[in-house]
Image (cartoon, rainbow, N blue to C red; front, side, top):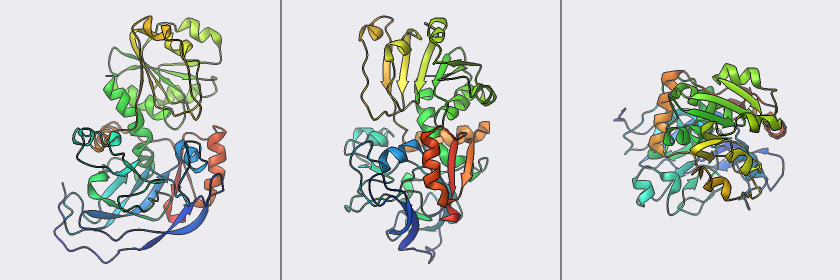
Length: 358
């Protein structure tokens, strides 16, 4: 732990450059947004890199409900501390830090006290598209600076470069948490459904945990990549024979797909007592025949990111194993193009914005 003993610097910013959607489904454009003064327990972060998550697109385009505009997306944030409040004890100027999907919670409910702040009973405060405790909109990581309470930032280990670390703040923890919870490891057969921004990190992490890893993708187009990233096997879900050949094969399936699935077919791939865990968030509802669960004592579950402590654990794990995201670094003026390419599955495997270009 680094303790700050010096007075705060004089680098406070009151407004910053950012890219925002002015309204639902509108292209993102460059604007200025306010940042609050650095409080006693706050840190000011100069953002170096911000990942583009599919959930950014869902929210910008009102896919998950009515948004708050102008909306500055971005919850995969990596940067450097440039100012600390007088009461900050975790970080000092110059520290490398990250911010993920939320920037506050009630801190007193059962979930928060258990390190599950993402399930806060009062509702976590999202890094963007949310209102803070003062009723002011939060603005995310497609910007040059961010002010956040020190308890909602995490330390990025020296073994990870900031550009490949940024996507870990959502994609990394979103896959690490269920793989950790369901004890993926030696002797376990794990399938990652979907090889995209989330799925490629699932392959890397499951492999590092020691599991036997299979990728389930619509086609074999990404097979070479999947095997390179650590998969032992790769199957096309577009081929009906896959569901015959792999019936009853897996202890755990983690689905990263943001579209409705034939749940009965996928539950048929589980062993007795196996679990299907969904981390993708389709905009449309799904359905299944309950006998697909009852037969085989199977579990259908969900998982949403992770708490602050588990996110730090994930970063430390990734640093030990040399796991960063596979990225395509872009300038901010290509964000709208990147959105269209994400929707077309034309990225290997995460766009990351160079914040110096904002």
